[in-house]
Length: 84
Image 1 (cartoon, helix red, strand yellow):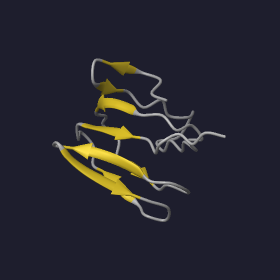
Image 2 (tube, rainbow, N blue to C red):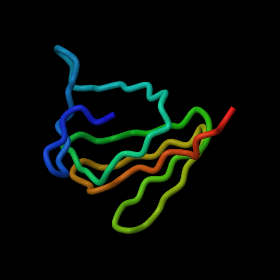
Image 3 (cartoon, rainbow, N blue to C red):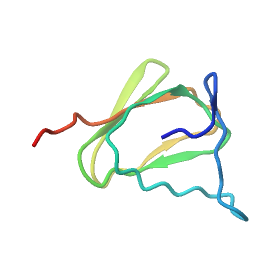
Image 4 (tube, rainbow, N blue to C red):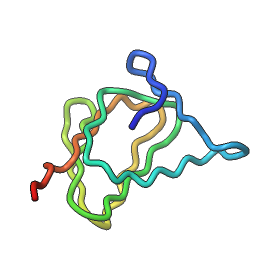
């Protein structure tokens, strides 16, 4: 979930007295095209995620670490939702 999105610019809402935002994402949701001044590190625990950067798709799975540099325009595609 992106809390603060102005057009395509996300403002990262850091915790008080911290410059690191840890987010344990439990939802399978896509993230729209956006960028932010913070570096983003993604490590799926199960299933695969896809990041699209400069119209190139990068898919990574459990145990992979994917780094998106600050200022990089990107969007994220969640794994397919499983029924049942």
